[in-house]
Image 1 (tube, helix red, strand yellow):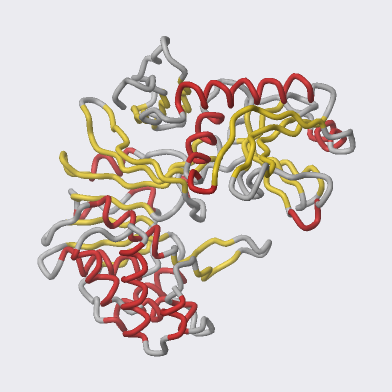
Image 2 (cartoon, rainbow, N blue to C red):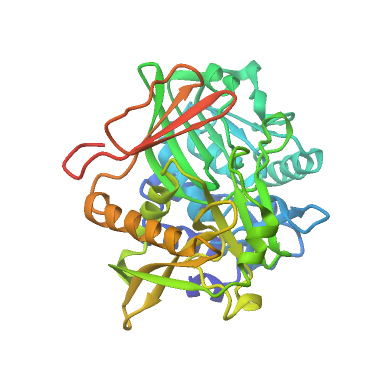
Length: 412
């Protein structure tokens, strides 16, 4: 977006952003393109943010907790464009947004027009105030801004043709489904074993079926819908292992001690090129789909040079047992090609790295070029697992997520 940065006026920056999002494939329809060219994003970010940064294709953090973790943000435009396009909104549509910032609600309002309904809900009073102020300044007074817990939606304006969730959720509360129109679409960043995927969900018989699953990141949901993840600091904040369940038996002290062991490296015949970067999304979810202890590793790469070198320094798939772990790794073979592998630590490093290579091999042979995972969401207690294919069930209080991997020749 060099042209956007070089421009100076908000109008030029908006036009450049819309062009960039169109050229990169995130914007596909005239309605979305017009919305991005119209809504003044700079009115929804802190005044300290430079104008060029306000129109960069990047997230803007607007609020942090005392520990420095983001609790509110204006999402990256590419992700907002994706969600807007997936919603397939028409003029006059009724839309509920869970998680406010104002900018996304304004984009939605542009698409649904004066006959549409847009409601945005947030649990944070300061966020609500900022959203209301930004919407009023930008001329979107018709948007209803509600201070409340998004877990319960907003019944007075239901049913909704689309519910767009802009916070990370670990469960699907009953209110969302009750307030969704029969032919409506639910777009939600759902946390699945600490892998967040933006799912586009539509009703199919007695459950929901995902038509897309895009890797993404959002601030986590607060309030009654908050489902904390387990956070194991293996070396302060430099090396952190996240677990998304309470049943995995681990020994944090033993895992921390494993870091002091000699790193075991093992490599798979499978490789990846620069043009295949999206394959990592498939591999990550495949590894997370295994019914075995699993976590994601996050590291400060600069402070762990020579110790850890995970494929992804923020959400690296990791196999583990009580006192050992192995994470996904890659190494460069030439200017354009990397090789998949695993790095293991602890007494069971040999076993875990071998297991990782086996899983990579199966994915590379059977699923890498297949239709991808079939993700369905069922009310908890109503779904029977499919026994004849690899799958994972993630059971929450309200919803159970099933991930099945069809064979290469089988439709998703």
